[in-house]
View (cartoon, rainbow, N blue to C red):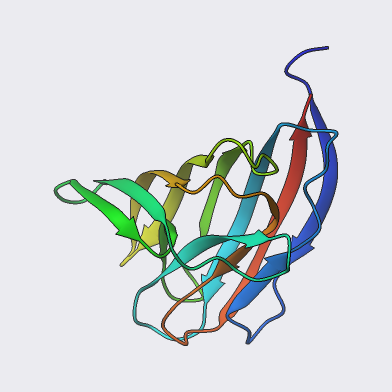
Length: 171
């Protein structure tokens, strides 16, 4: 059936680490992938973010040639839009204290292709200062480069307290 999802694997963060590599996950069996992220949080009390980078066929997280946009919809304040045409990552959502979590769904389009850029579109719900925020994140790895996996990380040495990502292949 076209458009059906098949579960591939689930990965949990190791508490007190800042990186979760989901490597060797992309195969010729799927063109697109769905990432379901649940209950991500960090230790401490200052805000950081969850970023995504692709992992190339050599096993290295790619740190250049991304383009990204992010729309933030605050339930308790004004909304914002940020755009970066020369980014080193795709920003998924902010991640705050260990008692405030991030969850959401993202789609990776054509990550295994060496003839098309990899596209990402995601929607996330985050808690922040006792309020809720919605995030629409879009990005591209703008170079036509085959990827074998992806890295989720936080950039500010605020280790993860919890979080999981389930990966599905789309038929």
